[in-house]
Amino acid sequence: MSNNKTDSTLLCEAFKALSNPHRLTLFNRLMNCCTPGTKCIPAVAVRYCVGKLGEGLDIAPSTLSHHLKELNRAGLVEMERKGKNVECWVEPAKIERLSVFFQPSQSDNL
Amino acid sequence: MSNNKTDSTLLCEAFKALSNPHRLTLFNRLMNCCTPGTKCIPAVAVRYCVGKLGEGLDIAPSTLSHHLKELNRAGLVEMERKGKNVECWVEPAKIERLSVFFQPSQSDNL
DNA sequence: CCTATAATTCGAAATATGTCGAATAATAAA
DNA sequence: TTTATTATTCGACATATTTCGAATTATAGG
Image (cartoon, rainbow over all chains, first blue to last red; front, side, top):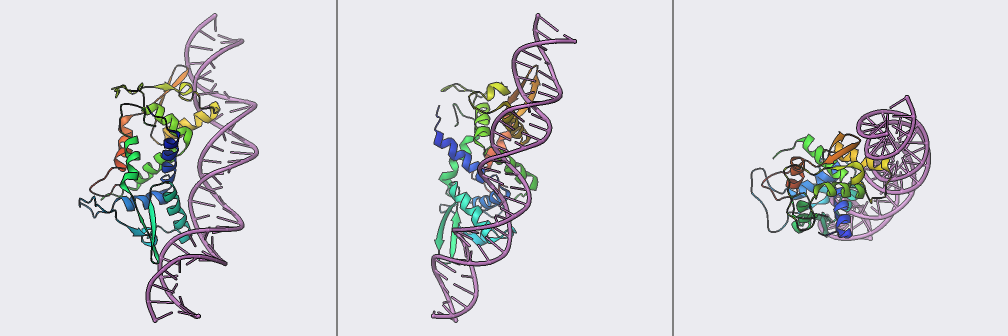
């Protein structure tokens, strides 16, 4: 069973955050910290500053800022100022719920 | 590595489809065919007709139809006319990609 | 053929989203 | 303090989405 209205809303907001191509790219850059072929599930999440994270995306800084804010609001990305930069990272625990949602289960998933 | 632009686009469209509360509910109803506490991963996917699927959602038939069409376009839900009804179901193979996306991996996920 | 049921298409209206540039804030360094 | 760098906020505009009701299509059964 289950049927936590809050849970459903949280899932929905996470999917909304990932429904934009730019935001999906940003999130993926934070999720995949490894160089190709490397096994890398680091104890401490890898961090990028906002500027680095948006490199090559060809969007205005204000737009980039807006998208990161959305990802943060949706609970997918953490942010913390560090000097002139603001660092971003993904907290693996916050992603688990999404991973489970698509897996076959014994009961209701929402 | 990887970087299939098509794959990224497909993921994005799937998330967009799930970013609406009504569509998330519809998708979840198709995903979770089991009564609570029952182990049920049937060989043949469970089907609902459009009308049954939308019961209790309090949206107009035309809106329901629109949402199912979106889920179908995104590749999340299959549809087939059966007499007066149109049956809907989820093809588990089509969901795998989404499940994998949120799991820790050895390389790029997009 | 006529009627009832199930679902879709279409057009319109309200609301939400993505984007930019200009202005502002936060910080570091000269 | 002044300047440069990094990032955010704000207001505006164009585009997209959600939703409905009316009209239409598809089908089954008298």
